[in-house]
Length: 179
Image (cartoon, rainbow, N blue to C red; front, side):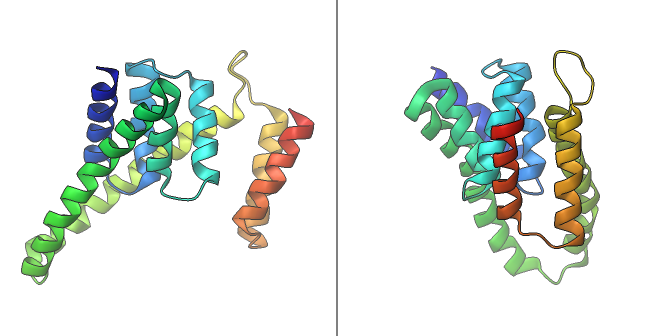
């Protein structure tokens, strides 16, 4: 029964997430932490970290890790298939529709109207991740080390074009020594 629940919940996440993996993180967090209680906020933050540093789409990685943490390998498979199934179905249908109606103004207007909502979902995911990563759960105050690490690595990435893989390795090493 848990496997079916994992498949169904992640199918809904996959079906309702527009804008890529980062846009789906808010829905995943809401489902697995708040609604279902399968994970704690700290466990979800760990899953986000693992999902970001492992190869592949972040939403599928998060589904796989959350499913595994909840119900082992079978749970991981159920959550991953649930998350991927709507995209496979939708992309197949949209490919047919796009090829048929790509020059239609109404179709272009619909796509243009969806863009702001996608931006809002990504911004919401960003704020959720920032609050989990930078705020001490016990006191509700910012963790100074985390804030400085966030600011420093952001500066390196945006001003010096520091590679993301190097930032991840550097941050991991800081975690070993500072946390």
